[in-house]
Image (cartoon, rainbow, N blue to C red; front, side, top):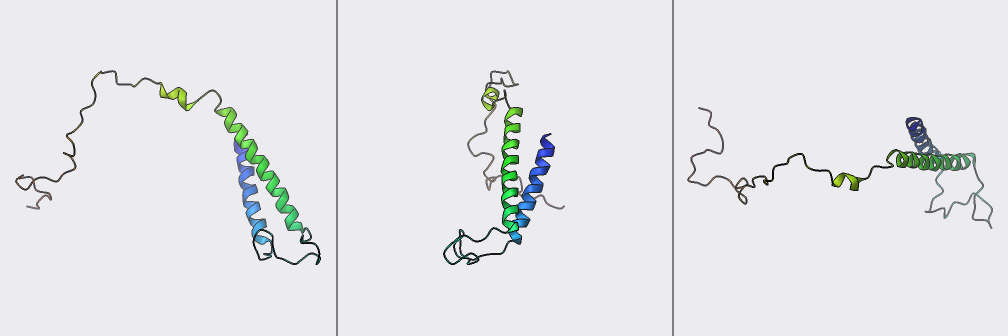
Length: 121
């Protein structure tokens, strides 16, 4: 069931992107500008693409909420905090050996005989 809702959600997202890109730009940001309506009213007449945008947006929000509820029900009873107290598999009381501070990070000293690059003899 979750996969069906997820596929519908993705199709709605693609449809919403397509419908928004098809709409005519009215210039200005946040709905300001655009003179399609009457001279007194700042609101333009609702077009078919505008109505489709609203329908797709509402359906997208509904599928988002549905997917959130499904995910919450699926994870009910399991918590990250519950997994913190899981005992380690290694039961020895010894701590792992820690190399000397920076011993693996430093290049060999000049007196060392080990070459940095193997020779091609």
